[in-house]
Image (tube, rainbow, N blue to C red):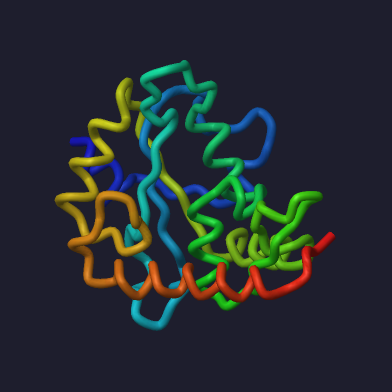
Length: 182
């Protein structure tokens, strides 16, 4: 049933619908799945589940404050330093990754790039979710059983894994060669 709720959801939600207050996304533990009306890369298909994420992550040494609402909303409007989904999408879309902040160790797409990515996601990204008490147990199962090309962790078996890993690595290398951005 959990698979079906993500692979054949009754409803997909847009950025506009998720970012309203009160948000329809529950402030609960669970798994979320991302679909894209336009594929972020020529080798990927539009209109199907490409990525799953969880909230909270399993943390042996402390309690996470993350939940579905916080994570989904952050993916739609946050930055690449705090969202592996945003980092992946920006790299696939060719947005320039930059070192930012005082230390220059964080990497985002800068103000303009993050705004462009948020706009692309508002137009193309759709999300669904299910509440699940220990989402990390379901995440492993989903990644092992489904074709989720945008997931890197636990997903070496996916044919797109090597290409995605290389694109992200190249973006980081280029960012290290550039000056730190404001």
